Length: 297
Image (cartoon, rainbow, N blue to C red; front, top):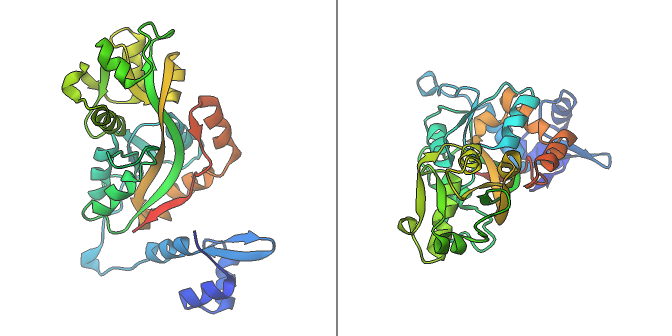
């Protein structure tokens, strides 16, 4: 992230330094004080300017409802409540969430896309690629929420001794599915292709589970032998967990939504100690990137 000094920020915004200091004093502009000096993140200044963009009456865009769509996550749901943001949630998977964001039906979408060419560490900048290639999202911004651990959820004690997707295929284990368009299902597709297999080679349990906790309940109830979800979902259900990848879990939104009071309340909360404590309690989370801008169109 590029930081500007006071004089550089004033030149960049074409403002006098006195006016800039007035904005700083009233808390009206994004900035940070480091060792007695004000610094201004350039990306944040861009978003700040765009958030006040005026359009002719015929170009007015309806404000989206205060809802975070996309992928389900326990830590995110808790944060929405504890932050006092007033934001609701609608868990339908990463792809569906991005579609709703595109249509202005949600204020943000929680996403964790995966692609075959994402690399061995599954840094999954496939989420950035998805934003770049989605029509009508030319004003998108991607904010890091956390990194989180995805893997195989298994019954307590791992009675079938499953330690990898190869074991699942070899044992003919019953695997719970997630719906198409979810990050977990994209991850499974990638892992199968890397193993030289396909969905046809799995003993699938249908219908698909809507969320990770729903999938965990299928396994806990003995209706499936395994499935892919987060470590936090496994812990909450008392299941065993075999780690597969660490992934980026992000919030995609339009730039004008970034400065809305509800979203700002949530983003401020990401810097609080309570979030880090809750992440540690749930397990399988790395909150260190929380609040960072990973991409801005």
